[in-house]
Length: 313
Image (cartoon, rainbow, N blue to C red; front, top):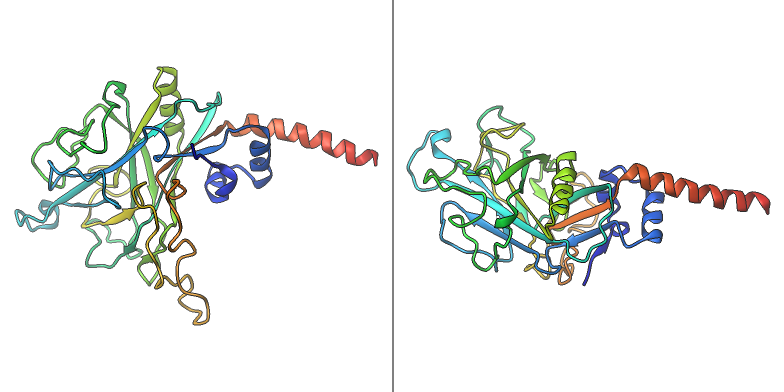
């Protein structure tokens, strides 16, 4: 088993409001506060594509979220409509689950060379070329036994295929948990390989807590590009964000990424270029940590004891 501690990823934990000193307390006090990757146990990740509803892509080294509906863009019936959903399942069996708990969901980018011809916002339009992901939870535990080697758009839990490619087909087995924005990509239209996007919300916390209270040993999260009524944007088209699944055991080489395009002397390339993902460090992951307030009080009490000891010297 390989589960990564919160201390390995400060930015993710900071998104939950956990300061660095608290992370140290969590690490020292228990095995809680860990990223659970899709590599662990019966975890799974796969992309399903509405444009090819019988295709299984569970063994692919990319998972993508994309959407295009030509009825919206004014060019109907040209055969280029698309709509992808990313399915991620996390095995929570045998994990020490805190009560109450806080959670976070993370994916990392595989490669994303983005430009105006591939990304359109038909509402604003948005010059920063930025939208995000909408995240859903599978509430029907009887459907949680989906397998990445057989899942397709037609049989994916929570989807009722309507034949209109590019529109959202989620049914009541999926509950909307919220959205998370992609980072700004700047003038180079590039996101570094291995950079993470992290989703947190009280809805996600409650979804995981409810699943565990009902006896579930896995949870499934489904992600799509924001569209079809999801706030804040509903008509983003022609999107293609690629993420690392557990099958991507070595991250792509990323020599052209420039973290500072105004400085000709800064080194090129993503800091994660070519990194090892065989154990799931960059795979889709679910973070479970003790509820911050409770953990912080415990740590402050511990620090108080330490402070008194130092005062006596």
